[in-house]
Every structure is written in C-alpha cells, then in structure tokens.
Image (cartoon, rainbow, N blue to C red; front, side, top):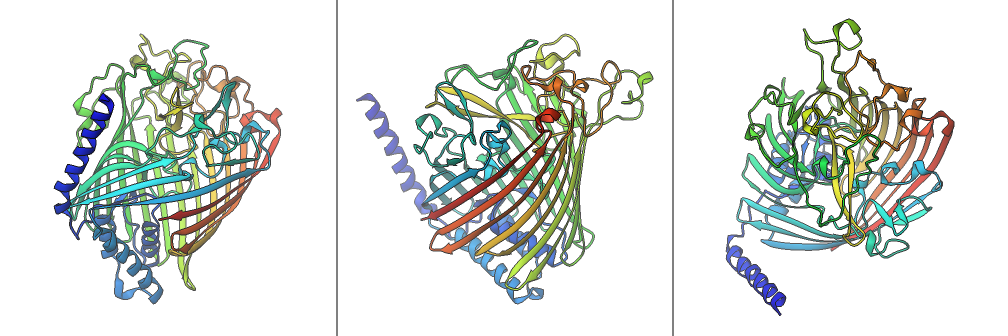
Length: 602
C-alpha cells in the first residue's frame, strides 16, 4: 500500500506540471536537438559543397536554431530548382517542429535481421566485429516524447526495448554473431530477458537556448569532425554519452564546451601483474567510486570568403579516484595543457581544416596531438637523450566531390588516415597508486579508452564495454577508404564502399611505456608483440603477435522512405582479414555480413 501511495503522489506531480507548463507553449521553439546522423544536416552539408562553401559546423548534435542559421548562409536565389526544393523541405521541417504542441510523442517499430556466412570464426563474433556499427543498430521498439516549453526549452525522452550489445548465457559469455542469424527482437531465439538492454533510454535530455546559443544536458551521441572513417577527438561510434554541452554560434563562428562522464576504471580494472581484466563488474549493488570525464572546448571558424573552415579542439581526460573535483579543469576558456596536473589529467589537441576551392569539391584534413616531443625534451629513437615519451599523433586527409545528378545528389569520397601506435594510451603514474613511473599489467592509466556500463542478465551482471573515445580503430593503424553514393533526399539512397586497413599489434589494452630503454620507439604498423611492455588483458596472446593484420571490406547499402511512416534498409559487406589477431598462423578469414531492416513510425 505504501508503494501505491508513493506512485499516486508521483502521478499527481506529473499532472500538476502538465497543467502549469501547458500555457507556456509556443509556436516559435527552435531548440529541438537533431542527432548527428540527421538527414537534414547531411543535405545541408551537400548543399554547402555544391555552392562552393566551407563546411558548416561539424560538431554535433545540432539545435534547430543552428540548422536554421546554416540554411540562412546558403544563397537561395542561386540554387538550382532541385536544390531549392531540398532547401524548402528542410526549412519546412524545422518550422514544423518549432510550431509543435507542447507535448507530443510517437512510436516506432524496427525489425532488423543480421545474417552472416562465417559464425564459427571468433574474429566475426561480437558487435565490434560487425561492420555496421552498434551505434546505428535500432531497437525493436521505441516510445518517445518531446516537450516544447515556451520558445526556449525542449525535452526528449526515448524508452526503447532492445537487446544489449554484450550477450550472456548461464555457462559464460555469449557473443552476438556466434550463429548465422540474429535479430534485434527481444525474446526471439536466445534473446530472452537476460539479454534486454537495460541502458534505456539511449537518448534522453533537456535542452534550451536562443537564436545563437544552445545547451543540452542528458544522454545523446556526439561527433566532432567530418571524417568518413571516424574522427580523432570524438568519434561517432559510441552509442551515447552522459554529457552536458553548451554551444554559441553565428554565421562564421561556433564555440562548444563539453563535459562527458564515464565510469572510473578502478570499478572494472583488477590491479596486479598477470590478472586478466575483462571489464566485468560485481553487479549493480557494488559501490561505484571515482570520477572520469572528458572535458573539452572547440572553436570553429568559416573564413577566407567562406571557402575555408578551421577548427581547434582541446580537452582533457580527467580522473579522480576519490571523487574530488578540481574546478580548474572545468574552466571553459582555460588552456588545459598549462594546468600541469598530470596525476589527474591527460590532455589532447585536435586541429581540422577544410577547403572548397571549386563548387562541389571539398578537401579536408585532421590532426590529433596526444603526445609530442618539444625542443629540449628527450627524443624518441635517440638513446643518448634518455627515456622519452613516445609520440602519439594521428593524421587524416580526404576529399569529397558532390554534384546534382538528375533528381538527386551524387558524391564520391576518398580518405586516408594513419595513427601512431601509442596514440590514446598513457601510463598510470601516481593516478594508479604507484610510487614510480613503472607501469604494471592490470593498472589503468589516464588514457582515451572509455567504458560504457551495461547491465545484463536481468540487471544482475555488470559489464564495461571499452572503446576508444576518438578514432574507433585506435592507434597503430593505416586506413584507406573510398565511398560512392547517390541520394534523393527524403526518399531513397544507395552507396558503395571499399575499405582497407593495416593494423599493427598494439590495441586499446596495450601498456604505455617510455622508450629508448628496454623498449625502442615503434612506428605504424608494428609487427612484433614484443614491442609492447605488456597488455591489460594479461590472458591475451599479445606476446605471440608476429604480423600486421590486413582487412579488406567491400560493401553496399541502401535505404528507402515509403511514406506514411514506413521505411526499409539493407547493407551487405564482404570482409577478408589476413593475419587476424596479428598472428600469421591464423591465416585468412572471410565473412559476408547482411543486415536487413524494416521500420514503421507513428
């Protein structure tokens, strides 16, 4: 009876809020937050290229006010008739969402089937080995609500019913892809109650702002950059961030301040040499301790007669074992590299530039600096200079050509990226409780490998899914990609993609170490596991890694909107990996992965 009484009081509070807030409804609320993969944003980017402009802001997600400002910079009178139609459709959508009732909602159902040809190979088991990203997989059922309060506030909540990324069984780990057919449907095949995704809601937040600024607090996907294969500071492959974000923007400039929180590694790393750490926690009743957060600011300019875009991102990974917070790290205008707090933070710097020399043709590049030798410091490769910090750099360059073709948009993109072996890695220092700079297996460091906490087995088991915060392929990689696509906005799209990667022996659990001593400086791609000092997964076979792995992926995908809320998609990829796991005796493995999905939104 007491529980029913509490529920009645909560329901009464909700009803009173609705009554109080309803009069605040407005027909001019542009604070809706559009996700990073929103089709309106993608069409705006295409229009910018075709008009010879530098790209708009590449730090998503975006408010309706910001997308509207992007449209305002386009020369409407100079657009082709088809381009004017695409422009008008986006404007109509933004205005329509701005004029919605204060409380709206909807329901979407998505059935996805995942079929593969080689489920017996462990190299194709688990979502990380599926070419279509986990972040793009749709839950079977979603019930969402939107709140437009006045002209300045917006809220979004999505209650989803789907399956978790990490599958479990009574006898041990159960991996997605260990049979030829899987689905996103709960209670179908082995998707029972223990495989429900208890991370829901995946997307939920409150937001607000004005014509030139926006704030957002809650859970959403993030992406900083225009890379096709990924971005160096913030990649789009993490399904959600628990974050707070503030952005200010006008036609030529945007400033973003971001705080994204993650579980502290002490909750899932077991300290000690030879102890294997798999990311499992002790259950939801286990006490969680420590603060781990990515804190960053980003500045974006459009300059040189709107042909050049320049972006600078600087941030720190902040960690505190005992929940203490140094407010210096939260200063939105601080130069983080000059905080001198190595025991608490690890700084990173990202530089981006894009140039549109001709209508339709855009050239872009990214560079990330995690660790770099300055004049007067020990130099990697020079033994006489003493122990040195290994370089941690990444470079990316690409080019996209976009043109109107018939009733749609044709694009071709080529991209190349290379990352140093030690990029995103860092030793534990005093943060791990060590008394020297010697890093031992099983001790975490302040690095750019973050974890998303999952609850499985009906909420009884805890799992920490570790991912690179920036480039999803991490360090020690050489990546080349070619993509050709054609799309009729709001109707259908099709694309073909050819991907190739050389990846060395270093991974997200490789132990960071100084070089020029017992461990020499290494270059990408590494082919000898002995180049590593150790590996956080002590039970892994890193010491047996004797070769560079080579991955080739050829794929096609398409999507169609049928109207009246119905949609469909399909993606097929052929994958070949030579020396999988960086071990030559593993030979060559192949797989064909097919994803088919149908959806309905009410």
